[in-house]
Image 1 (spheres, rainbow, N blue to C red):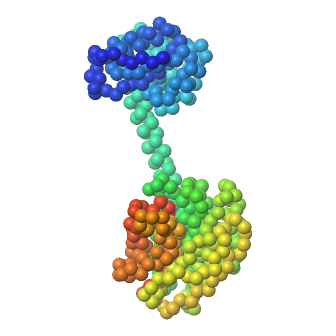
Image 2: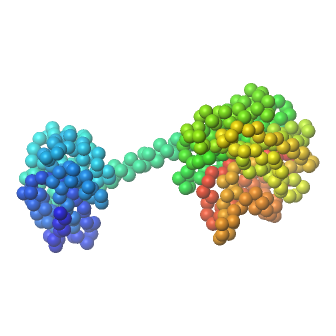
Image 3: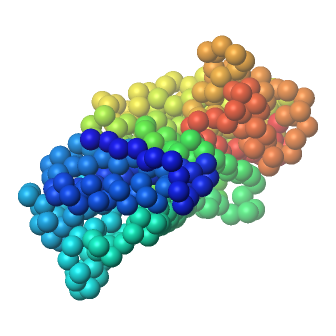
Length: 399
């Protein structure tokens, strides 16, 4: 049953929120007394009475504070308190009992009760004040817990991002510049498995990769880190180029949490003296080459994603025109945003149009990836929802 307070006597009701209280008490006389005390205090409240823990279970929705008697037909003492605390969720729990036992009160608070009140030792003003203080303490505890969880998630995400975003393993005098870029989709509460890596082998070859594990979250990000580290190890170990992605796929299939998880990758081995590259794409957007004043996607032979049906990824031989060029490798988070008010996506063609704009041509190469994301955000009507990873590999003037 539900009782509402009468006119105020002590509190200014217009300044206080209505307090929703559940009293778990099997003694009708004590329940009547609590109701009278709350009414006497004059504060706005809603009181619902349950005569057992089983009845209370179905009345907790929307309740801010629970007053619990420790002598119920189906719950006794501290054990009853523990059972109620497990059900109470965000509601504050205060013990209201006839047992004036200091040791029991300390134990109740230690178990999670916000207060321990003794029947006959509280008046209406003290009771309502205790309940309001208990509710505020519970809210403060919940806020502190959520803040701590957010801090832990932030720290974990930072550790994962450091694994996803390595320092390129390349000499400064190699003759090829690499500009990496990464932006997390955490603005939407997401951490994905986008990754990249750059490894120089010998004096003439540069290995690069950009990849994306499907899905969003810590599991996918951790798998992305594993794949990046495995790729670097395979390259440094001198594994033949055509065997690197099949070996990477083996790692993916053994480490993923579910058979549905797959990854897309675009990799390239740049032969600097011969000014050419061998490109392999597995279900991933093609690289875009900037040269001769224009941007165009590489006409790659695309293989299927890694982790679905192990199949060799075909190689595409790319000859660069001259010694002033850039190759942009990226994840699909960059090109999946909308353009305008409809459902049309930026896609690879739209990306090339952005790169051909005068503003893009006038930018220093180091600033180009960040500018691209800002323009994609603008065309999307807001921040892109997915992670974005990019590698801009340049030689000479870069265009």
